[in-house]
Image (cartoon, rainbow, N blue to C red; front, side, top):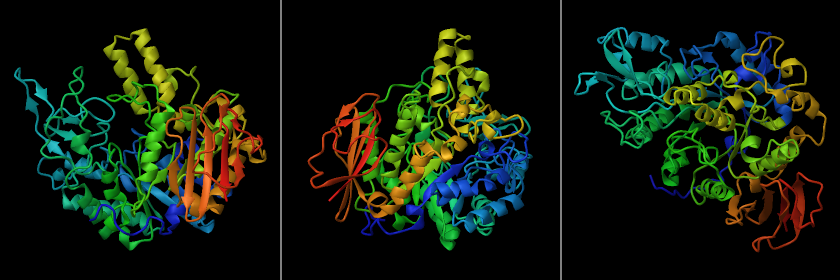
Length: 579
């Protein structure tokens, strides 16, 4: 396959132009008072979603699951987690979306299953079971003292060894996430066929419009399981992403998935692609001529400030780093037939206002509108996460660790607690990092109104509702033309009205060295727009770049400031059409 095919990435497709809204079922809307969001609750809010300007709903895992990792540990691909509802409820949701001209995609989680899946129960029952080879089983190694050791030193993505000992059959199995999430053996053709039938065709035949594919580059491991280089001398377990991401058969597996299943339906695919920093490698996944995926999520922007060896060992990030990653992933599709995504939030990220704007009451709304302007003017498919449209923020610093639910957060905190013998300074630092970047912040319930529990449930919510529900909620914002929600509706409509320029136009960064503002052009044929964003709490001088010659008409702004002003207010955003 040529790396830069001749076909254009401006070929029109519904999944390029559509605005995607991600729903995390447990936290969206509870319909029956049990404290857990559910499918009927989602159905009850479809008109709200439609009114926002959404074209595509992405539904996070709703499948039968023990919920060790919030549904990413699936025990039955063709059933629904009881508190969420039934298969008939999901059918009604699909029909309800289609009735409103909204498409719907599901999460596809097929790197691993739950250890409660029937496949794994068979696999672990005996070394001679026909499904033994459906997962990765290996005998123990022993050190010089005769102590039992895992087959290799790989670290799990959630900490600790990536191998779990099974007493029944006296072998280890691979789990790149929790021990309750054993990795499927994609080398086995029977496994792949079962995935295609059980997890994909079943739902596609019921009308689902595609998949967001979880950890899409982890199916092919480098075999045999060699030790990873030692990069953390304080731990027995080492980062091994080079050995389980983008493995030798990865492209082959996705080409087969496409030819066997996806190519037979009019669907969209978006892959989660961690640990793949090179644009050329990403293009091999998303080039339309490669026939693998439509697009992927590249994580550089949203992981700014994460630690190198440990996410929660956070560092300060700056706007120059932000711009470098933005420019890299906006421009990597120039001149080829690839496609890209736009997002700052999802179920695995903290809230974008807290991360990239300011949750200071004086600047919260204006910075939320600035980020909305930013996202709605970029090239690619726009992804919006539930609650982002009303400017939801991180949980407050006052929340104790007991309020956090996510296995990643708790594993890290407990690791620090154990390794430092409960040192108060170390635990305080760990708590601060969790408050800044934990996945929990996106998983607090949606704040529908200012009543008890934010109108999410009439019962006791499974997770505490963010204390901000009294002043950040849908009901207060729906009919307020100055609200964050109203601005998002306006920005999405603006994006659709100028889709040739904003969705398909070429991105040109104008102020790469400015540490306070972000300025860029969008260009498509004879159309041109200038976007100016202040990322600070202070006024900044606005300099028109030399590339923006012509008459400038202000068409979108989050401020009342005159379009003639050369001073940008705190977190001010402006979009000019240039004629």
